[in-house]
Image (cartoon, rainbow over all chains, first blue to last red):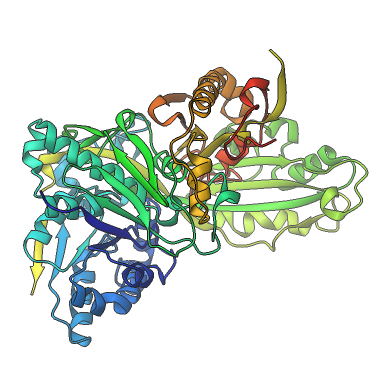
Length: 465
Length: 148
């Protein structure tokens, strides 16, 4: 039976603590350094970056890698990262070039196959309607054009890359926990095919790794960050990042390097297990973990054992994250001070949009836009009535009227929207001023989750050199 | 039974987040071994095996929490959710309940005009709501958040 594998996380999102990779490599023994650089919205951010700068990967990962790759090569620490984003092959080439510059002999594995953008016509031709998982609407009905479309791959191709000798594995869109499942399955020789066929031991082992991966995927959120009882947490100005020690049966200990800030308790682990989940069946391409079977136990200082996790075969369809450009949006927030807040808001709203406050409140955004004098697709109005009577300080006297507009056309949410109110600055309710100067609108993306059959999404693993 | 009007967060933790236009908030009652785990984390010694009374208290608190988290009650605590679909998933193995509120975030973080567009603060908002907590869930507390 193989020893537990120590897998460290050093990133929970694009923009997380830059020094965390170095802290995890230098803070104590680990076998694998992993992290998550891709939220749903990040794919849109990377899409815009690709348009501007020609590549759609997380560049901060390269900065982090430069600090730790030499030490990792010396100590045999493998690195698994989804920082490839929209361009895993490009990032893989950059990692290989960095290794050359540093004089390191490092083999780079690249996992591709998640990017479905070039294959959408083919998938639609094969009868896939790409229905929205939340609304049931088909893509054709909605008449929208995706700008990103990525299937969530699992741990299996990462395991293949490690088995093929990769020291650093770069992926695009994989599930957040896949970067943990992959190395655990590689170390312990777990059998994905047996799991899919229903083998209990394989399913439970993979499910255990999936749960451990979910716990550490969001960095310090497992070690006291954003914790409801944060006043109990020592050293929270700089918590250590989490480590999962995963045994050959899939049971795991969640911990952190000694001497670091933060804490690992049943509470901090429970909090993270509940983060961004739905029902008790937690789906992944490799296995489904049954959250109602998880047992948590404090077994020592900053050590929580996860056991009992049962797995079920994974779904036949893979989740796909698509994003489309929804249009352009803009907001204007007016400060309303002192007396007669509703009357002031009503006057402001009739000046900007030609509708009264009572008519606007709780109204559907499309219907409200139609009723208004603004030529926009959607209008939302919110009165934040936060002032208190007899205010002694300015903040006690302030309420806010927030107008939000959306339209396909950027110009309609720009000056056309903000000018009427600005022009009325000396001609409307007493005390009028906006919280920020008027600004042009910004484009916004909309997330479109869907699924496709697993067999239509083959993954490819390439190890260079 | 007498009750005290106190924040839900007195002994209930929460963490919230987004999945597209849906928000989820997971709530749990403080684990009976939490005080000892916190003591250890601060470098003090503590016995990790909780006594039977602490376990019974946590179980009673969880039973009460589940009773507080019906869809009807949640719509009172979160009037924003009045017309939205709410899924409630109890996870007794963790003394936790996961609540999913569909459509709270419109079409998602980039589109919504909600003041908390990713529901990051939804859990803390719920913890701040005042509820009537039975007195026997507040007494003899040896866990954090229960020292009144």
